[in-house]
Image (tube, rainbow, N blue to C red; front, side):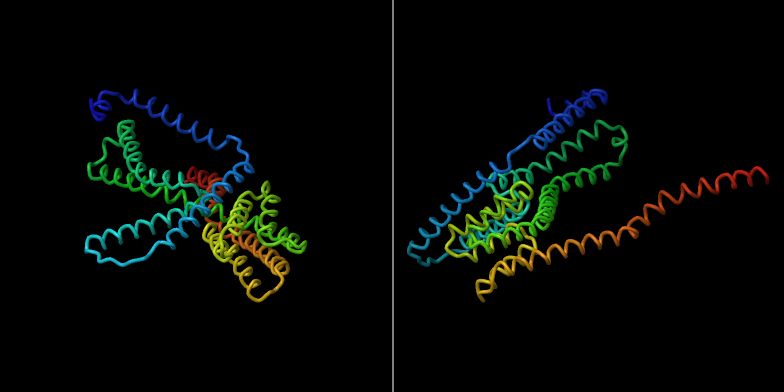
Length: 324
């Protein structure tokens, strides 16, 4: 029996409990994985070990590729097209990996889950729209063109939803990074004035802010690992900017590059940056407070003033109608 014939045999009273059970199970799974307690320190140590091994393997592969003899060969039209397709696919995968890293997902499993969601999302939304069509009788009275358009919109939403979720998570993580960066910079000032190097200071600060700002601690730990493994320190700092996508961290990296180039004190630069970031955060809070009256105007006009007019003018209008 096909799925369409199976749903045709069910009535609305039978489809509604099935759909409700599916939604309850999905909601329970989401709540379970959201509320389950996890140890951020243990997860960070595990992530650091995996990232260190990944960097080591990549460095070994780069050295082996550099040692191979290079030669040029004549390529046909099809082989050139295939190589261009592979290059474009590699660039797309790297962009997706970078966006996932900015959202806090750096494992290879996250990349596979994202592509699986992009592939299965349209089918899932089509199935939900199909079930909703049999659950609600009002949808069955729709015109065929409008019904087809609504299903097409549902399929398009299933394709777009993973990108929207990743971008929103990256934005929220960027806000958390900007919020915890001034405290981390203050600790960096203390560490650098005590005589610690950059990699040691990053490692120590990541351990200190691991409970209060876990996102900042993760990025500093990864940067400390890369500073110890990568031959070029600039590459590790550029990777920090790429993983976060936050303008404040880009300012910190630019300041570090200038201090290494001109020999200025790192602690003084960190102190100035921490003060600037706190002042910028205060200015953003004042901007939101100043924008609040204009934001509340529309809800007040739409919801509060009609009720006020009804209470004040309603009795007068009723009395005037009774009089005339």
